Image (cartoon, rainbow, N blue to C red; front, side, top):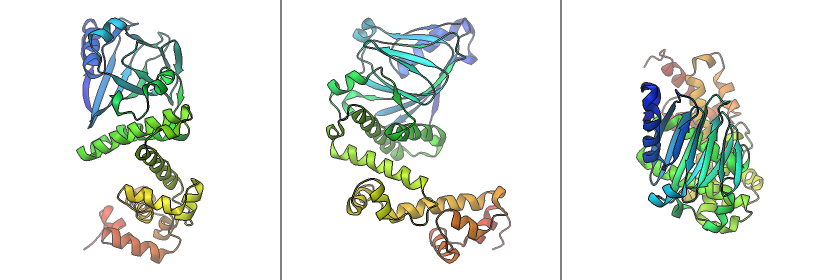
Length: 325
């Protein structure tokens, strides 16, 4: 679960900078920070994902610099990946400069100096930050170094999958179990590796398990986007990703499920959500089922009852407080 590390809005303006420097130094890495306004503000929440940490940050205009001196004093040897979710900011590392807008991603290395800024003309900024030990990334440092401080898109391909994972973690953090946290942290690192490997056109540099995890996330996203298609079958899914049906089944088996079960779970979850929604009470049961890939009402009723122990109409009545046992 996300816990609040610091919210400077509760502090006197004179104490905010020192508190922000101290808290970000402990939660992230030590940097020299300067707020551009006398009443500069910042907040940070953090969530542990095994060896990985997810942080949600917001801050007014500032300058943050990691200097060679600070690196010599303490270096946890981390990669940090930032997803910008609000405002405009920038980061520079190794003479590479990335101007960042919402939806952009950037990776940087705690072992080399960097300079991050939110300009005074900007009404603050927000970001989601993923950080993890460099040793966890299954790519050679020499391959990653040229990408640090460069602009990466979080709006397409693997970058979009990674952005969706990070934002989903923020939105659903209260429902994530400790075991989920470890698995999701590993997935986030795998997707980061896949994104970087794609940028350097070296997917073969990834170990097989990382490639497979990234492909599973890509296929899962595809399935969710096409759940309304009743003809969404393993053959069509495999063809859309240029793999054999046999390999598709193997990928899902490695995740402890099957393509058929994953499809059914995703469809039924959305049907159940629609049936529990009072705003959709006028939509017929058959229409709900058809909308999520069950063109035949009898198939929908049978699948729903098997999964949840009651028919769709019984579930709708119970969820809206009108069901009589």
